[in-house]
Image (cartoon, rainbow, N blue to C red; front, side, top):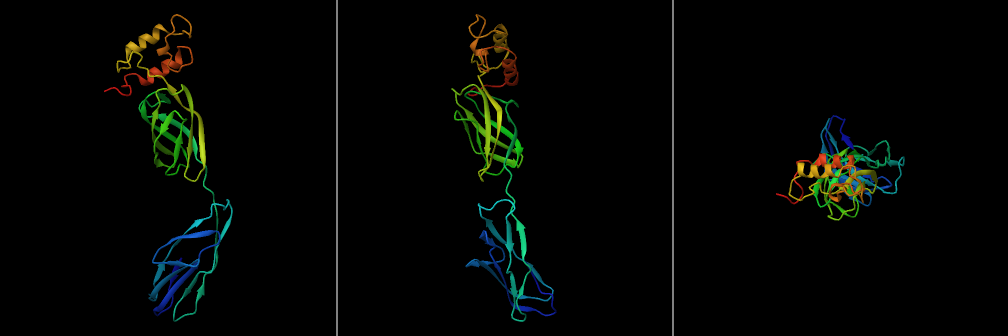
Length: 256
């Protein structure tokens, strides 16, 4: 809301009034503006010749307003003792609804993979678009997600804790913004067993050798090793090796 004195003498007793546009509610005003009865008033005082001030009024758009709704700002009036009141030309703007968030990828930062080890506490990085501060992540009831840290509208991080008894398999990641809009990515991450099969706090050649002895075996066969079946699909094969490789030389959760 600009106010200027284009004359050659000071204007005194200058005031600016601005009705709050229909479909909105008053939030705040700069420059000492005071809202009363749906109208915001600025008592500017003396405005010297050639001087100008820029004032702002912040309003909240009704949640019922849909995209394309036109908001009309009219009746903005500048007055002074020396001059008659001047009413500004009405201004209009259209409501644009925020976009729903889109989730395109997620990784566990410790291994730079999609694998979440049962019993682990770690950090997940999520990529996508239209993320807002305060966004909430959900990965299922057996994975606890903490408060998100939004780096940009397209990337955030979130601490997660995977229950010891979490069901093995893929998880849909759902991100919900504070405005209620949400987006999901099916099979974003996968819960797997601890690759440290002998629980010596090392994911190393001993665990790999155990997997090698059980290679290509299925549940019920003599060579099958439950601890090497890291994805829990009843078969020891390439998918389990992929989990092992991503966790190789990493210290399991709870180890020094």
